[in-house]
Image (cartoon, rainbow, N blue to C red; front, side, top):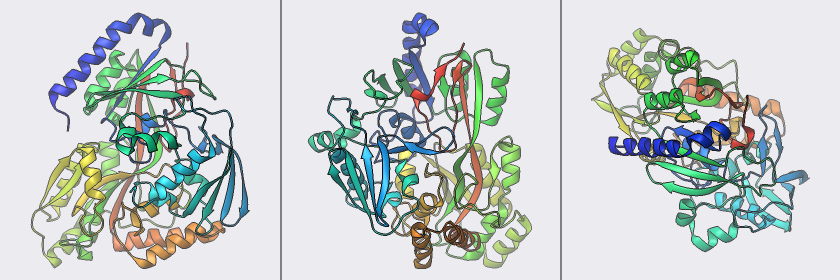
Length: 500
């Protein structure tokens, strides 16, 4: 959690930047300033999995394939691909791409990036989306062949998250130094990281595709949403992440700013540890689910933009089923279950600094109303991520989190949380592993959908998690900024422009 002095310092620096550059900003808008919630936990694109990091590094690195603003998977560094067999796919790469150090991007860099993620020793949090890949090989200067362990129909969806890093730089400087000073081939170059304050990027004027419209971009850490709102209202920044619905309403009358909401594939959920007391008792897990009024939270607190869900997928994912609803809100049933089993001793539920405190407090009250004794433990984002990656045996008793694979496919969404091979897994069940593996390798969409529905029904019945709601991302932006939000929360500076 950031101290007041750092927040003040960040604000002072930004004011200073704006004071120095205000004539330029007014005329040309050459500096683009973004308020994030927290500073990135990592700028190495293969060592993180959170929105604040994602917002920054997606502009430093290119991807093998990407999604356009309409959600369609399209070529990027790969210009074409073909199946050599059920378990081999060959990608043809562009021959005109250079990293920011001037070195040409080649097939060996793509192969290195894939093999780095799937190496268990590297411990990438993204491994669950890529671990069906056996190996990646450079089979030509501009050709890469991926060999799969088994057929994998969600491969392209997963590869939209493959950022390509330069093999020669990573091997020369090491992982830790690369994280602090990353080199990519994207539309913006890394310039500076003032720890606890801001990350600065500079436009890559030699970029092979659409160039960025701003000469520089500054991503600031501003954990307080009221401060982010004030910044965008005052014109101190051009974009702010993670506003509330109330704050979006306040922007309706603004002369300088507007709100941009979009329903995303990200979902909020209660993460239960069913492997240790008290929630090794299924009755208490069910009581938790019955106690939470999702409709009341989304309508009464979140302004109706977020949508209640009963499964660990959203309608934005392939694999969503209309036939899985989960346990309904029924506080009387919750009270009866707690009374029958016996109220457990006071326990904590853990939330990260990124999570909406109002929602956490509402859930705390609802749990207390049915007989639980709960207190909130709030930790910074990096600590939270470390805690929930401790595995089924050692993870927190109860936590509230959000999840997104940024892939819009159940393979990435469910494997990351429910397959025993994932560092994020909540529970380890051989039968669930088998369903996920079958769904992930079947060429039949009907089979995949049926298997994912079985996994979702297992979650609804066994309650290792409580899905809460499909999250709306609410952005604040300069009124003259043209920006199309997407369900996968992509933030590409070179897809933006100023309008008159």
